[in-house]
Length: 358
Image 1 (cartoon, rainbow, N blue to C red):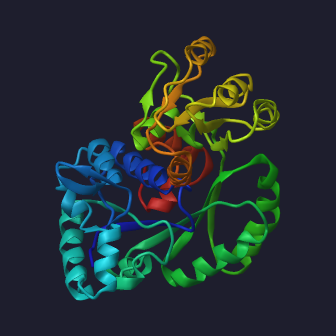
Image 2: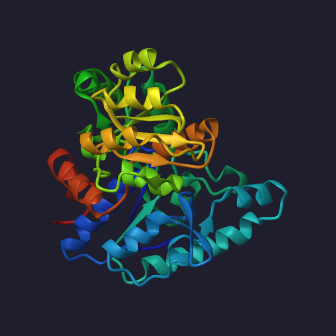
């Protein structure tokens, strides 16, 4: 437990903007002159860094908040597939993990006015070692912000269930990425209902295209793909994928009905690649199998400023990997955090949420 003003940010689903919101709140307080700490108790967005598996989000937090805290303190538990397997086999002691977490909490909160804690993508993660976000909130004596999306009225069940599970520690719910088509229903019906059930709502943030999907550059980086069109714009966002496994004419009909998509197809399927380049909603081609596409395809793509990516893996494997990248959400960088700060400033009372004066 810490005497520091502590807010834990958790969510009901992956890719809902939890990281951007956490860091936007942290940098907002930091720029207002407060000493702000950050930690992510369970690292889940993993990559290899200096020979170790680390979560990318604490790395970004350390940079944006000018923190000197060691990464292993900001992320005491690397919640990798290997860790989960070892925990299931009884080789991870929950008491030892809790002690390690407590030590990191003390380090990350030392000398701070405010500690922002980034939780998991759902309330179940950590159950096998008794360290769910609710368990961690108890350890931290933290208030909890629940970030969630909304598509249909049936989503209210999950939101209300999560809010009740958090209990008295719930500071409120924040809706993020809400489309124009659902905002009125949410504001007029769902929010009043939740508040009548004792669930406070901090606000509704609109869907922002610059925060949706991933950039083609980030997709290429995550897949280890080669970019065959060097001058094409890889900063464009893609939100979905379409598989080019049909004839050229059928492919063109399908591609014309999709928007902001990357087409995944075999590198030897020139007719599908050509069809994709003729559809305005296709923002990139991802060619599988390591085949070199026809020079005419590369030329047409370059002319239309559409990036062409190439991977060695087969189409089925590539689809699974693309699906994972898109599911886990948008690129996380300083620009993402700055844009989220603007949305938060316009959409909620940050001072009330953080319990500070800005």
